[in-house]
Image 1 (cartoon, rainbow, N blue to C red):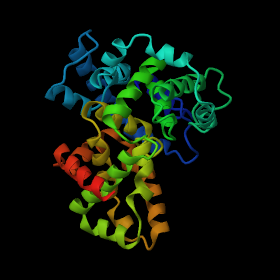
Image 2 (image 1 turned 45 degrees about the horizontal axis):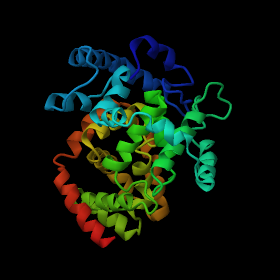
Image 3 (image 1 turned 135 degrees about the horizontal axis):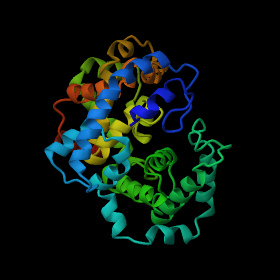
Length: 336
């Protein structure tokens, strides 16, 4: 999260705190209005986190920590907390030297070619990944993806991983940590999302449809009548974990919860986005118009206010138990 010291400089800057260039339609006035309120929240959160960590740099799972994570991890602690709460640090510490060994191995030329092609497509609007970056992270992105492919031949490389790894590198600023956090993400948190057949991802798209049917049958029925499968409009939400869908501060707040609580947060956010766009979706006349309405989700003012947005996410999706998701996954798996 941005500190008070650099926020004013960024209000009218073309580049945000993470290296992303603002688009031509960026609403600076709304951003300034939000930040004027959010800065005091950031200061309070930072003070509470500093007291919680009290120099230890790690935490144990508890209702208090869960509450703190849901309210946002300060940027100065975010990388280490992701490593800690996901247990990626424990995995890294028990596999000393693995990352460097994987980097030293030859990679299948066809997979290397896929990775190299996508390097130039990854966040071209970010100063760390654009092709003319003087101190960029493209080499680090290539390294992490190569090590991951060597370690996971059953996956190799899957489109979408480049964006996820790029964001990990921006936050963690370390290749090895990014690799082990990616391992945790793909092996335990989002199982099957980045497999060759995307089975886990496809199942969860169906689960989202079932959850919408339970929460708002009218939307579910309209989507079905217009022959608009959820995978058509929401796949990128799940593949890229809301990167390029929601403002970066909001996305990182979602990732805070993802690494602590698991995939349930992805469904919570999806339900909020769908439900708050009910009128727009229900007035869409055909599939192409539905797709267009979903594309406009990211431009809504509420999404910029990450604090209010996350409060709404947990309010809108209550109750939502993992047992419900697991039951629906089992049913959708059979149908798939």
